[in-house]
Image (cartoon, rainbow, N blue to C red):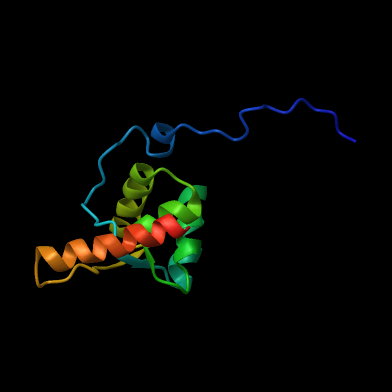
Length: 121
């Protein structure tokens, strides 16, 4: 059996290293915005890095909100926002806006539903 020393921190990577120091996304994407990835986009994401490929895989065949992507990949929301915005700009994800056009009350109701869904995860 291999008796190498195991780093107790695991595979810890600081969020700023994942986003290359950026804290703001290229474009503002709402938490409830729905994202998808086609088979082609998933295949292309393999060349964009491990984290982007993981995000594309989560969105393959099933529409996911930005909040769900962060939860499923166990990434901080800020990191997921930056990476997802990059992926939309690079055509590695397709953005479908889920925001209602009616107004503020409907948007707040939708945000409430997203929040309760996150709490159930």
